[in-house]
Image (cartoon, rainbow, N blue to C red; front, top):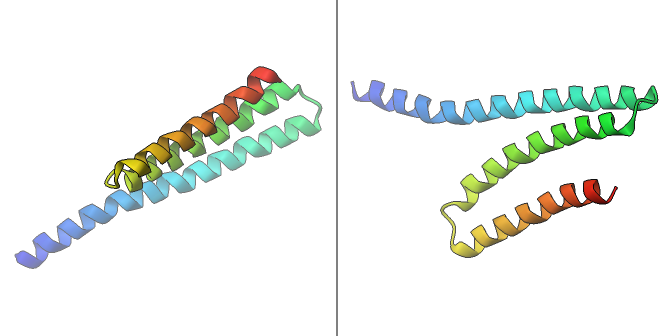
Length: 103
């Protein structure tokens, strides 16, 4: 019975990683579709607002997944790592929002 308990525990812990891997893969597929549609719309001369919106949605989804993974890495680290994490997120957000406001 001890082997069955150990086996089910290892399966359970690896299933979380598999779920994250699956989400990451399908996010790449969805982003590819959004970027392809944006490319086609751009080539057809559709307004740049629609193209930018599709690209923004794809980029935001990928940034969210990466931010979650990064937080899992940083959470057990000392405070300086957490400060670096939040500073990087703020710069990324500013890099996305400021060009939208200026442009």
